[in-house]
Length: 358
Ligand SMILES: Cc1cc2nc3c(=O)[nH]c(=O)nc-3n(C[C@H](O)[C@H](O)[C@H](O)COP(=O)(O)OP(=O)(O)OC[C@H]3O[C@@H](n4cnc5c(N)ncnc54)[C@H](O)[C@@H]3O)c2cc1C
Image 1: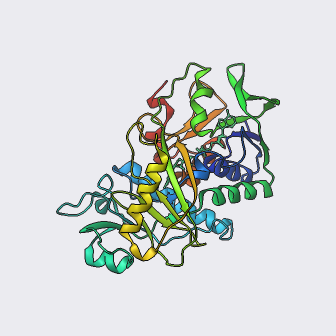
Image 2: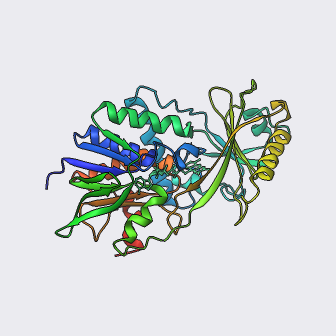
Image 3: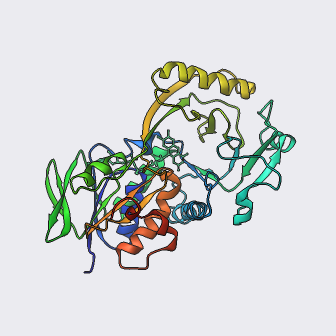
């Protein structure tokens, strides 16, 4: 069957990139969202584009391709994503374990290197007491999540994609053993392919077909401060908070992983995050909180992405993942190729839905 029409459920960064890529390939694409664009995880994301947080080689390769895909996208969109490629310093013990012989990513062909306290001081002079060691991931990118998502959506619209907001997809239309579109709160919409990019909304849409996708969703809190005049040289992913600076001078501070109930008292968490950041870099001066967000990361049960065709539902595809910012552009490149009848990428082989359900 020649695919001519697609409906993408979800206007976060994953749905936006998919819609853009499919529209560029000449499909008639409609993006549906129950709310507005980037109203869930993508608008409240720290949005660090990196391979540094991968702990196995296949995932590292996918994430590296993810970062590379943003270079392509940024070029196609004439720099409008405004990616800051100044890299990151990482000393979160979950991501960086100092040990003799270095870091496993060195053996995977990565360019990351381990730096000592003196080198860290040079890389980020605002740190008064740098850690003994850190991973310096020089090729990482940083974006403003809401701005980047909005930019990709507008770029998709500019090449013909239609967006319908306030349209909740209630179910998938099933006919002759094939998915032929969606039922929304405003009626039905038929399409040759239907792509679920609904973040935490995906499992409910699958459940109607007795497909139980396990999840490990996790909420996260971000603080945006008022603009400050000092400039951080790069992003910091520390053992407590993570801090980056937007081009307008605002800091975006994220929390370290919290346990269950860890966000029951957000005010206390916010005060602690500000205190930690100020102690780490006193030269920043007084930080005033301008905005806070709490959003849920869509995470499949084993922590890895789910990307590809839904085996029991021909015509339907899914793209659900954490680190969806890092992975959205490459997911769109590879999945759109598959949808259009091209080869299946080996990069996606470990991340199929079939590992959970047949
Ligand atoms: C605090 C925080 C920090 C993060 N930091 C990073 C980071 O540094 N780097 C990184 O790579 N990733 C990070 N992530 C993860 C990343 O932001 C997400 O993986 C990514 O935004 C997911 O995008 P998405 O498009 O799949 O989902 P979303 O952005 O959640 O979008 C899904 C959309 O689907 C819509 N929807 C849901 N159900 C339906 C339905 N039934 N009908 C119609 N529409 C529906 C929703 O309204 C929503 O707009 C972070 C996330 C959080 C919360």
